Image (cartoon, rainbow, N blue to C red):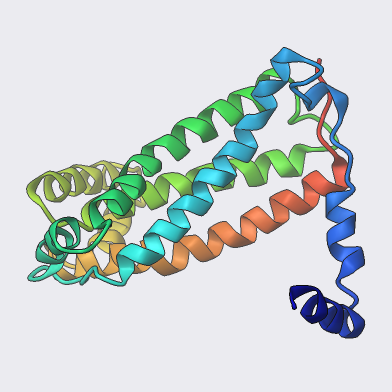
Amino acid sequence: MFKNVYNWIDERLDITPIWRDVADHEVPEHVNPAHHFSAFVYCFGGLTFFITVIQILSGMFLTMYYVPDIINAYASVEYLQTKVAFGQIVRGMHHWGASLVIVMMFLHTMRVFFTGSYKAPREMNWVVGMLIFFVMLGLGLTGYLLPWDNKSYFATKVTLEIANSTPVLGPVLKELMQGGSIVGAETLTRFFALHVFFLPAVLLILLVGHFIMIRRQGISGPL
């Protein structure tokens, strides 16, 4: 049945050449662990993307129960943790995945730097990769406030004061992030919007560009 459906779609959209082009793409020998033990360092990028997908899927599950207001935010997280089937597991995956994805991105960045993969003709991909890194940090920062407990509240206040210390633009950045005179309902709403809508949209665009450039330029060789 699946084959019939696939053939029906393929006859109309000709999708076979698309996925064959991806599936038939050869992996360079120097990034194949079967040939070189040191090739495992080239897996950091793929592992980062894998964890990112897990973060997106687990985050979609969490948004079905999370309530982004200061009265119900903590209660909704507690309900998710204690009443929803597998809720504690999924939130745990999302919580620890947020730290793990930063670690993997750091390792991937170090691999790119020490193997000289940022050099011509891959300078633009290096810039895009660093932008992805900053977006990931932003996602971790904005997601930290959402449980609305004491730890996240005071950590966000510290973060806002750090932003306020930025030369010239500090007060503007703080007001933009805080949304008012205190860390309150508007702050939580803004952080939720950034975490769920704006930053993921930017991340998706950057990832598409990152993968297109990798596809066209190939994976760089060792030094």
